Length: 455
Ligand code: UDX
Image (cartoon, rainbow, N blue to C red):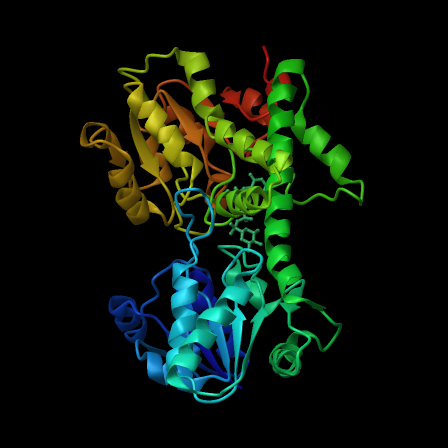
């Protein structure tokens, strides 16, 4: 099938590469010439396991192309996926300017029937705005071509996006019940047929419900995390081990084990933005989403928890103190620093006068970029970008762990002790067992586990 993907960001690039891998003829459009040049030279603008191989293989096979040519892109695909960014605007709503510009571009060039598929995470009602923007262009040109706008939200996790695309647990597609909508449905059915051979994974629904499903999924997941974080903070006070509680409740199939890990807060490009956007949608309709307001507030507070444990141990003034920080990305297997908890912890440690040595397996370059934006030069100067996890520890008062990279899970504790001034670990992701730490002679501060570490 001939497919056009508009936007070669995270979602567009993964979607385009994976659809080519299924044998489709994919044309990826982006207006960023530098990015297209990089992709055409075999480069990949993001860190995503497996993506480079899929892109290389399908480029070589001639099934995947990258271009800035809007006319050629619109002419190419019967299916036109819109996968451009929807960043939050000042009030937290999703900014639709790129989505609507993509719709107008399709309208400026199309001459025959097309299906426009919204892949970007967009608020309820966006498909109608896409339709209106596109139709206005057709009217202006006096072109009578018909089209349909479908919604097909993505559920890709960063760090596992290729795997998530290739082995989806569900495919959500919203189509209209018009004749054009029926054509869209048939095309989408053919496109996703390879995933539905063994059992049907597609959930068909109306366009608005599909748009909403994406927000509902992310809001539910964010809610579970904030809920556990709030309980973990209480667990620390009342002498309860949150990990025991996690097992105890997760074994109930109605609750399930996933996404119940207490930690130092969620980050990334989706949860914070989508929770806010859904709240904004509700407010626009005169409703206050009380639960989601709390989810957001709890998460903002949770990003301060590690810093709070540090000041509880060393006092408010950290001048002269030096800390090692492991993990900068908002989660493992990505170099994405958007809304990362590490940014909050680093700002606090530095503002209180400490110096830090940081290490992340892949996010070092991205960290240099975003921290230079976050921090005043005087604070930035007190960060050392270490060459390895062990290198970061040299001469530090304590180690703080912010991201649950596999590489941090079984470190050489003797080396950690030898390099730190005193053996103290603040673990924002509960990577270690308090009992093991006690045995190793390490002072250990986890999240919601202090009952196990009290002397
Ligand atoms: C998320 C959704 O999972 C995905 O389906 C959607 O399409 C986009 O948003 P992503 O942002 O890549 O994906 O990250 P995810 O793996 O969901 O983790 C988000 C954050 O929650 C991370 O900061 C992670 O550390 C944190 N988290 C996750 C917890 O603190 N506890 C948990 O139990 C799980």
